[in-house]
Length: 457
Image 1 (cartoon, rainbow, N blue to C red):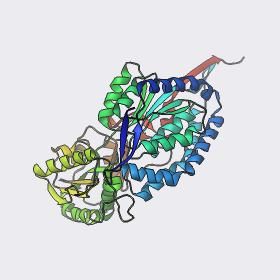
Image 2 (cartoon, one colour):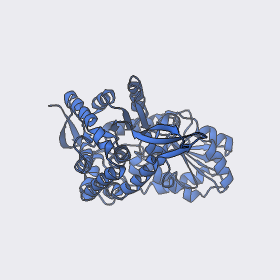
Image 3 (cartoon, one colour):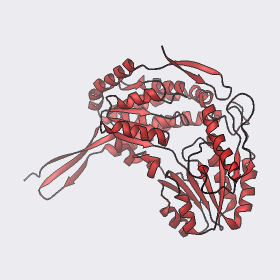
Image 4 (tube, rainbow, N blue to C red):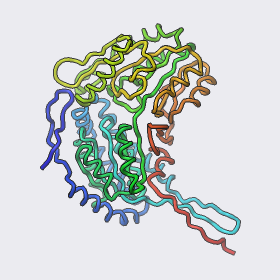
């Protein structure tokens, strides 16, 4: 029996040994999902939604356990972990309402005929999900995929296997046998799942893994939703509310220890205000202490792994060696656990790796610019990514002009990039393929099918 070690990143100690799903068992579970799909799709939407609401209720009875497991497995502060665990208990009902709208048939009349546009499930969906939001990210795929009439084979990240198991137990316990199936393992299991007899892959994770999935899925022309990484810019013009902009930078660069796909990773500040803005950022970032997620005073937990901490340290060290100023932090904490402090870099040149490649750690990178709209757009777009962006200026028209020219799926103007209920979450350029959420996102788990017939005479 092959296993993976589930490690507590705050201590480096093993939480559990998790059995890896072998090739034969993976094939069996995919076949079970395939065999179970027609009966699941034959239920009415209301019947499927009732089962999923029951799954959310089962999750509601285990939110404390789930929150503690999230903190133990990936280090997130306990209060944040519990909020994440509890969020989908209520959010499931909202998503099901959106899915009902997404699946509603449309009548498209023509001169002599009527076309009814229906949306049918694709079949079997492979859900491969990350460790940084180990409850919310899986459920953003599982709920709409299942509600649309697909069956699912679910592989959580190998760094959060117990969290994934709790989610699967809560929902699978309320569903017919074979509708939701759990597999465990690392990248090789994910690769085998992609190549297996599935019709669609829903993946949230790194750009590099997304590229490999896209190549592997090509042979079977399998449908894809890939939500990938980001290198999100925040532009601060000279007339901005500096206090508000600094608060946004610090909070959204450091939350979840910077391990967020839409973290603020690049900050471009008009030269005339750069010194004052740096002072504000450093003062606020200095309050972001790190420690175990179970310590009430910690704003940041550990990084998820020694490997991830090493990647962040390498980027920071490379930037400093190339001339960036280390203003705050920048050195891995000594002792057990994978801790890295809140870090601020000043005068970061645009040519450096840290200005282009995802950091995924608690690092604020400050780059002065000449304050022009043209240069702001040029800098913001100087990366392969296009997930999110933020613009701060008291001139709303200028903010809108710049936002429209930044190549990203979401842009916040004088606020963080969060969008209204019902908006899809979109990765432009190399930050994604397809999208999740909202009516448009939910429809990607379906195939539109046109049924046409003559008008009655």
